[in-house]
Each structure stands twice: as structure tokens, then as C-alpha cells.
Amino acid sequence: AELERLPRPPKTLTDKIERCVALYSCDILFIHRDAEKQALNMRQAEIETAFKQVRKKLGKSALPKIVCVIPVRMTEAWLLFDEAAIRKAAGNPMGSQKLNLPQITKVEKLPDPKKMLYELLKKASGLSGRRLGKFNVHERVHRVANFIEDFSSLRQLSAFQVLEDEIKTLSER
Image 1 (tube, rainbow, N blue to C red):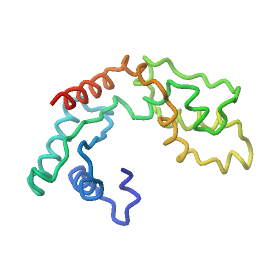
Image 2: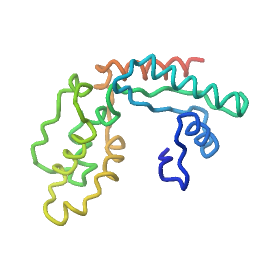
Image 3: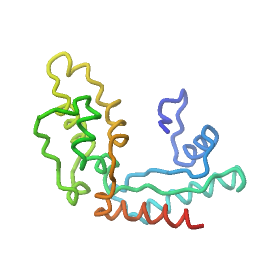
């Protein structure tokens, strides 16, 4: 959910969770926090603490189950492995511009995966001049995941393995 588009967007994680629960009916709520310089368990604890505060306020019956989504850097790093998806999202699936995607094992170490993804989308579009100026990269970045057909490459990344394990555990309950 892009809560920052709301008239008065919530600021704290607790408020964000509470607003999501109020606005979106769901059985499972995926809560995203980039790890950045925090340890994975610190971010998980942060999410769990915020969720407990919401549970205390709203009551247990009103809340969905949660899954923590905690990439090492930024979620955009998880989108930097599928050239075809980037080209399709850019609106130029048959483009021939060389994109030079990073190796999957290196994406979590990139200093700014979001910036790299934005630049790759612009390059993949094949546009220049005014047309490139009108290219809405913010809109296109959301399309990349929709075009990825096989996420199994991400299993090489520790943070993705944790996410996948958490989903499996939840589905087995």
C-alpha cells in the first residue's frame, strides 16, 4: 500500500500497520522494511513490536497474520535480475540497448539499487530527448515485478530465503 498518497499519511510503523488494516481487508499482511544497516532480527523485532501495539489497540480478532519482508538493501535490488521484465516494464520489450545487469549474488551489495533500476528502465525504454523526459519511471518500476515469470533466482539471496521460509511456515499453520 502506498500510504504516502493519503491526505494525512501515517508516520510511524504502528500507525502504518493500523491504517493498512483499516483500509485493506486481508488474511496476510506483508510488512516491508529495508534492512539497510540494521540486522535482520532487529527489523523483525521492530515489525513485531509495532504489530503487537496494533493488536493491543484493535484486538486480536481484527488482525491478519503478518509476513516480514526485509531486503538487505532495498526491494528494488530484487528486481535487477530479469532483463526481459525490465524491458517490458519500460515499454520496449524488443529493445537492444545493453543493460549490464549486476550478477544476482551482488545485488544486495549495490549502494543504490533504486537509482540503478530507474536508470536501467530509462535506458531500456530506448527513448531520448523530450520523450525520455516524459517517461514516468516511478510508474514503470511498479510494473517490473508483474513481468517477472520466475523468481527462483532470488533464492540465492539470504533475505529472500528468509522471506520464502516465513511464507512457507505461515502456509503450513
